[in-house]
Image 1 (spheres, helix red, strand yellow):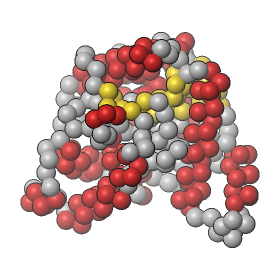
Image 2: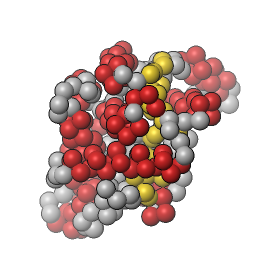
Image 3: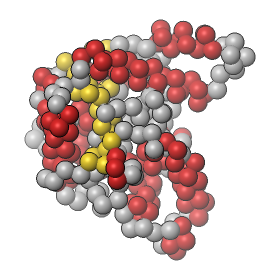
Length: 280
């Protein structure tokens, strides 16, 4: 399902990024590079769309970032021959949390700590765009956006959401397609378990159903228009379907605050006025 016409998907994304920048009268992009699959694919697509000299990567490790994620991100940037900077956020993060101790009576919630890291990174990325006149490319994918797995004013920030109409499984297919003539995206990025790395040993599967289960269900909902009872009649677990629908409904408020996205199919998540559907 998610490997179909991956070459067409790749070309649409590259062409749409190029057209978006042309229409905006801009040349340069910045990408927040985490060492994960989504930012890796967006960086590679941006280089193909704009050229390596017009793309800059910022690596912003926090206290919870693993060493292998940093080294993977550096390897990717060097494979693509793009300029990059490493901007550790631990110092800013520690100052923020110290200042909030009194406000929260010394009991800062885990979700607050996690979202704070994402928002610090968003501030740095947007400051970079102000300083350089570049535009920030967002790296969230359709699976995450549908489930609200992202931080407003943090990792959901950007001028353009490149992958917001691309499911997570399709992101892996894009990575393999990008690597078809040689390693661009390090193999370790493609094979590692997905994680936002915002807390100790965090994994996406702590919060979301595994993508191999989630993506076909989301596809059935959005592309095929199936309702809960139809999904259950097809063999889906009722509790899982109820969980997915509850998560989707509880985060609808985020959708209206998201940047424009590249539309790759007939059923994007964002309202039509926020979707860019450039012809190939």
